[in-house]
Amino acid sequence: MHTTSRILECVPNFSEGRDSKTINAIADVIRTVNGVHLLHIDSSAAANRTVMTFAGAPDAVTEAAFRAIRTASELIDMRQQEGIHPRIGATDVCPLIPLSGITMEEAVDYSRQLGERVGKELNIPVYLYEYSAIAVHRRALPDIRKGQYEGLAEKMKLPEWIPDYGKDYNATKGATVIGARDILVAFNISLNSKNIEHAQFIALRIRERGYIDKNDGESKHITGLLDKVRAIGWYTQDFNTAQVSMNLLDYRITSPLKAWETCNTLANNEGVTLRGCELVGLIPEVCLIEAGTYAYLREREEVPQDKLLLVHSGAEYLGLANIKPFDPQQQVLEYALHHAGLL
Image 1 (cartoon, one colour):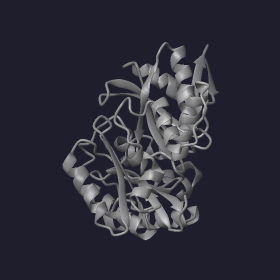
Image 2 (cartoon, helix red, strand yellow; image 1 turned 180 degrees about the vertical axis):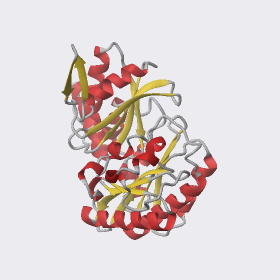
Image 3 (spheres, one colour; image 1 turned 45 degrees about the vertical axis):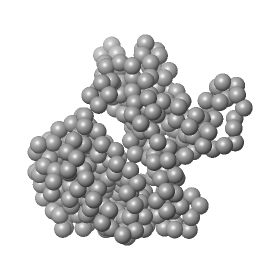
């Protein structure tokens, strides 16, 4: 990214995707912080989840994150919350991502300061994850989230799962996971099927952790096909389809194109086709340029030098507008930052 500014990004996930008043209240409190730009809001009624993306100066972003977590804790009651997405708290996870002029080590410091403040001032249990984790078994989000909100009270009693900050169980607020991480691409591939078993079959085989194959009474661990990928399969009423929901933890290792092609092969083997992708949040430009370049080469056409043509071609190849609207100017990370005046 061509800038000398210090830019920290924050992508909190809130356990509310249906009540517009609550969603707007959280967004509004983020906007109250000078130096912070709210880049994107993505809500799902079926998941009952909203993902907000904002960026700016590190101190300002951290302050905005605290205010958002506080507002969510005041408006979301986890005792009443339900949806298809795994979660443990009103603010389920709050990652900080260093984009420019700030190291991962500095982002870790900011995340720990934020976690300590959330635990002390808001009385919300906080787990540190990814680069901020203080123990290996707490680094991966699925491990922290295992058991979900319903199992949180008992999990917190275990010595290995005592929160890093805010030690007391809070029934209304749940817990929050905070940490510094790399840029992540979150997207869901929709199948031309309502059968959740198709989505689960594909998810188990692509995710890095793989699955346990039980055959003739023996259990064997099968390694997943894609590195740095987490995936689950579900059915979503939002689009009346089964989906493979993915987090690409390092798009340089497993890109959206690679994930799409692998899912397409597995789906075809099961007699299913892909409808398109639902992007959650923002995506780096290079991901769409790669997919666009592949699309041209696949048709044995000359690859254009115009980046925007490649971006639009990549979005079309991945079916990013087939499930819900996709606007590159709003959802490509670099373009969103540019429009906000950060690049």
